[in-house]
Length: 268
Ligand SMILES: [Fe+2]
Ligand SMILES: [Fe+2]
Image 1 (cartoon, rainbow, N blue to C red):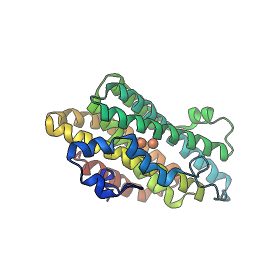
Image 2 (tube, protein in one colour):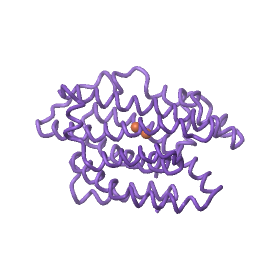
Image 3 (cartoon, rainbow, N blue to C red):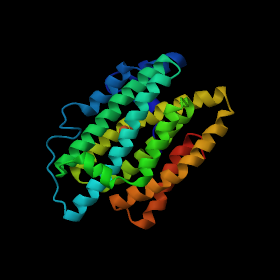
Image 4 (cartoon, helix red, strand yellow):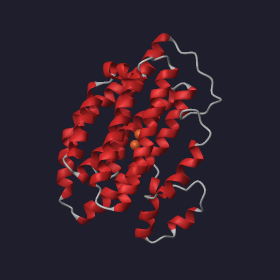
């Protein structure tokens, strides 16, 4: 079960100090840069481009290296989509603490893009930009376009659903599956990225939960967005799991993990 990131223990502060706050003060606090600093310093200090510097490069066959590169091309598109969308969302966020939280997410997503591009360089890709354009899957590229249209249309709840629920849950599930059998450097990098993605899912869960409570009719709009996005999500899932090398018969189980994350947030 995915832990509730809003309740995750802060790395350097007494957790009771945060949990003792009144609900509004709690939300202000977990959306703050102060909370963000406390959270990331435990897993982001002393690294070399997002991974531990003392890890040796594993011996990869040409085929394994190629599949890893293609997988990372998909990840870069997903992370770039999150970077572009979260920065656009700062403008349309309805209140200050959402703007502040999203600005921490912009920093997280920018870092994710940077470390994955650097990993492509470590794997011998000379021109990552060209490689991504050539090798990224159609599903994730379509998802990126669709997400940015929602943001450009000023649709706050629909965009938060597409980004902080769907995209994040998809990344969470795929990265978790990948890091089980990835080389040590890629696994270390993904593990640190997943910690950030949990925080982003937490924001989506909290924000949409409160909005739906205030306006139950929103559920209809969210359901129709989900219907639009489902084919892109399924295509991305199938493509990414195939690139990681997850056997065909194990892919439905991971698809169910993803659906469970989304269902846990109240969306079937
Ligand atoms: Fe990310
Ligand atoms: Fe994220």
